Every structure is written in structure tokens, then in C-alpha cells.
Image 1 (cartoon, rainbow over the protein chains, first blue to last red):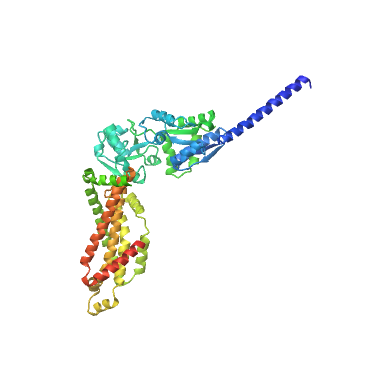
Image 2 (cartoon, rainbow over the protein chains, first blue to last red):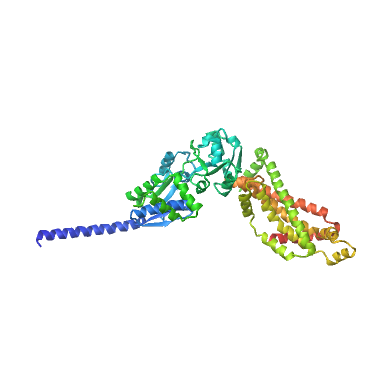
Amino acid sequence: MKFRERCLVLAVGVVSLLVVAAGCGGGEDALQQGGGGDGIVVGSANFPEQLILGNMYAEVIEDQGFEVERRLNLGTRDVLFPALESGEITLVPEYNGALLSYLSKGQSDVTSPEETTKGLRKELPEGLVALEASDAQDKDALAVTPETAEKYDLQNTSDLAGVADELIIGGPPEMSERPDGLPGLEKVYGIEFAEFKALDAGGPLTVEALANGDIDVGRVFSSQGLIDARGWVVLADDKELSPAQNIIPIIRKQDTTGKIEKALNELSATLTTEDLKKLNRRVEVDKEDPEDVARDYLQQKGLLG
Amino acid sequence: MIEVVTNLVAWFADPINWQGPTGVPTRILEHIWYSVLAIVLAVAIAQPVGILIGHTGRGGALAINLSNAARAVPTFGVILLTFLVAGIGLVPVLVALVVLAVPSMITNTYAGFRAVDRDVRDSAEGMGMTGWQVVRRVEIPVAMPLIMAGVRISAVQIVATATFAAVVSLGGLGRYIIDGLAQQDLTQVLAGAILVAALSLLTELGLSRLQTAIVSDGLQEESQEASMEAKLEGTTG
């Protein structure tokens, strides 16, 4: 070996050593920041839709070759959000309107999807990022039976304006007072119902009362699986009275990469409220496993590589 | 604490809360209506059963055990279950309240009949009374303090529990509690709770007056002791 070649080998050796050392240093740094480095930890709240979404998020990120830990079924936002801020979890499926209201302590008054996401990005604490919002929404909505929809020609909430005085509405007790409840329907849509029955928020009381005709209009959630199972018609909130609740991934800035963001954004762009309703139905009504349901959907839509 | 009290006073002083279909008088009348219906139904079901097993002494153990088991049935569950079958209306509320009230009425009436002195019954029969006459003219009057104690316990429970009517969209004083909870309006919840408690107490007072009026004078002393005992039993049961 000539002297020059020896020098080159030595140089390469030194450089690679430096690279390795730098790598180690980087590793220590990541540990100090508490980011964990390799793994993404997906959290979710404790109802079927959240379990499906959490599994979907985990699945598409795993598909990109990352290691993912699933910590689903964690409880409510009061548990989830602090865990996200402290780094115990790194990613959660959220709802733009509900999270904005949580962060602004109920002081937000925007209702359109775009403004809500914009407002949410402004309120999000440093270190958290809201990725692209999906069109899929789980928001307060009014549902009627197909017969009622046909009889009065109903598609949008505003179609109720002329006929509401013949109809009985049922929903959660707070609906009679809340600004986006009956007072809002009257103010924004000019709708006054014949009667209000205080029942529950999309629970068994409202569902059964609508099914057996005790009420004509039921306050439900737009992505509820039961709506799909019963074939009910959800009236579009065409004047945007109740806040948008688009599904939106919230992730810790230091744990995200371009690949992860791209995968989650692709999923958000594909998912619709109709899809979500069908998936919820499979878990809520048909009692399928949320993990299977999530994987089925991703495969069907070609979201797994 | 002081704020809670001032808010409550303001709530009761506000004329808005005393008018129309959501006002206190309407809610009280609704509450009384559900309660009276339930009490009448429960008496109609429980007393014949209690009298029959008490008089004959047959099937007593079975009936008492069934009654005691029935006390474990959760009222809230019965309301929701009946609602899913029967829909909005009085049926779910009445079914749940009657299920709640019948057991203590049956056990008290049965106990009252069994406590009638054998000698008294024998002498009634010895005087040539028929079975029905013994029931009507000897056993019922003598057992009346315990029978009435059962009715009182049940009635107070019914009045306190008729609150649940509001869960299935009916009226009554429960409306204030359920709506107040949903609207996070503590004052309204407390106002409702106070009204329900007051109405329960009035029921107890009214029925004890009634008891004094219908129990024969010779049994008054005993009557008070018996109902004290029954009440103790009611609170531990």
C-alpha cells in the first residue's frame, strides 16, 4: 500500500469514527429530550370511533417502517391531552372543534371546518402540530327516518324551517339552553319545533324514541354507526350552527417525520363521514374488533404499501 | 357556600320559576300525579297478595323471599329497559315505581297479619265469623299500623324516586335535577333536590295523619311503636 492510499484509509476511518460518535451523541440527546427516538406512541380516547382511528394511525405509520406502540382506550381528553403534552404519547386522533373548545376554554365561536382548524393551530401549545384535517366529521347533527325525510322533502337542516312546527325533536337535556341547541336553531335557521323531549346525547333513549316514532327528529352524532344500521337520514348543518368536528391528527413536533405526516395526511384525505359511519357500525353494532375494521379499511383503500 | 345559598334564594324568589309549564307548581303537580298513580297501583297489587298470604299463612316464605329479592332490582335499569320496550310515556315510570314499592308493602302487610294474636283470631272464629269477616273485621284493623307503615315507606320512596321520570323526558321535579346537571347549573339541581325532599317529608307527614285517623283508638299506642320498628327495618333493608 502506498503512503497516499494509507492516508486515505486513515482519513476514511477517522471520518467514520466521528460519524459514529456524532450518532451516539445524537442518541443521548434524544433520550434527554424524552422523545424516545424510535417509537411513535399512538393514544386514543375510550369509544369505538377513537379505537378505529387510533388503530388506523398506528397501522399506516407501521407500514412506513416505524415502530409503533398502541396505547388506545385511555379515557377522555382530560387524560389524553396532558399525556400528549408530557410526551407519554406522541399522536392522537382529535376533533378540531372539540379540541379548540378545550384549549380556548369554550371561548371559540367559529364553526366552519377551515376556520376551526385555523383557530386550533393558533391555540395548540408549542411542540404539538395539527396535521391535515379530514373531511370526516363526528359532529352534532339532526337525523330523521327516511319516511319523514321523504314526506317533508328534507336534506338539509334548513329544510325543516317550514315544517318544524309539526315535528317533535328529542335530544340531550342541555339542548334546550345551549346556544348551538334549540336557541341556535331558532336564531340561525328560524326553526321552532312543536315540542322538545329531553332524552340523551345520541344514546339509547334518543335512538329508540326516533325508531318508534315518539320523536320525529333526533339529535345524534354525524358518524354514529347506529344511523347507518337504521338507515336514517342525517340533515346537513348547511348554515354551520354547530362547530365543525373534523378528524385531525395531533402529533408531537419532535417525533414526526415527513414520511409519517404524508401517510397520515393521505389517510385523512381519503376518510369521509360516510366511511366513518360504516366503520363505526361494524364495531358498535356488529361488535367487530376495531383493529380488524381499521386494517380492512386501509387495505380496501390501498393505503397500505 | 354563601354564594350557593344566595343563588338558591334568588332561584326561589324568581317569578319565572313559578310560572308556566316549567314552573314549580306545574312540576309539583306532575310529580304528585306520577306518585299517586304509582302508589294506587302498588297498593292494588301488593295488598291483596299480602292479605292472602298473611291470612292463610301459605306461600309466605316464598312471597317474602321474592319480595326481598325484588328490592335489589335497580330502579334506573327498570326505567330504561321498559322505555326501550314501551317508548316515551308514563308506562316506564309507573312500572319502575311499582316494582320499587310493592315489596315493602307485601312484607309489611304479611308481618302485620302474622302478628295478630292467635287468641283474637280464634275467638273471632269461635263467634262464628267467616274467613272473610275475620280478615275484614279483625285482622285488617289489628294489622293496620303495620300495613300503613308499609304504605308510608313505599310512598316516600315513590315520591323521592319519581325524580327518574325526567330521565325519560317526562316532567316532575326531577326535571330541575336532570336539566340542571346537563346544563351544569348547580342552583337548579339543588332547588330540585330541596323540592323533592320537602315533598317526601310532606308525604310522610300526611300519611301519618291518615294513619292516626284510620287506626282504631285502642291500637294507637301500639301503632306508633310498630311503625317505628317498621321504619327501622325500612332504613336497614
